[in-house]
Image 1: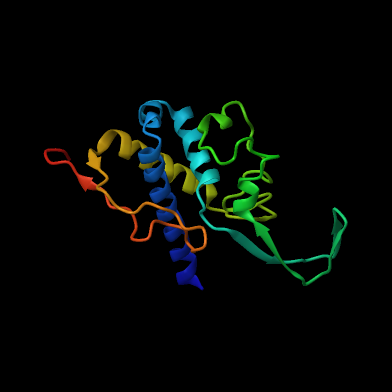
Image 2 (image 1 turned 90 degrees about the vertical axis):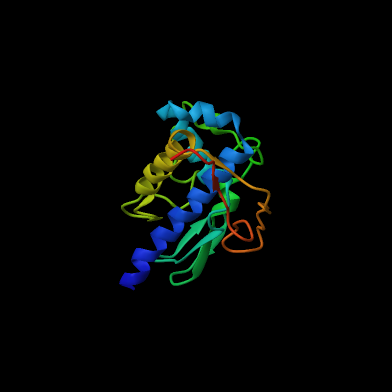
Amino acid sequence: MELLNVLRPVVAVDQYLVFAALALHDHPAWRERVRDDDEAAEHFVQEVRRYYPFFPIAAARVRRSFDWQGHHFPRGQRVLLDLYGTNHHPSLWPQPELFRPDRFAGRRVDPFELIPQGGGDHWAGHRCAGEWITIDLMKRAVANLTTAMRYDIPAQNLALDLHRMPALPPIGLTLTNIRGTA
């Protein structure tokens, strides 16, 4: 269990870094915007977390029986929280199929709307306690990808198959260093 507690966050952050690089590749106009603007970088990272299919669901068991929107949830029942579906629900996210980091400008992120790593309160809910570390690491990686590195993404299959877990490009993401740079 201890080993899993170390490996899971490393794998999770790795997936998000691939998604951030893909987003910079697919939306090159954002490279300039995030380069020297911490607020734009924050919006970009939040949109990467909302838009890309990190993990489709979170599973849990009901602690106390309750009723919600006409459905009864008995104690002990296994339930699934649709992370991807919630992060793409049109009543929460206008035009959810579009990558639009500006949607986070002036918006307080609700712990039940943006749920890429679980939903609810970090202290009492089923949400990743390392979420803030993930966000910081993603912002640092985006800064490196836009300022400290010069790279190219050679031709490769970058399609994301939502039927696979994790939904990453089939052979990962290859970046090649441009000669003469660090």
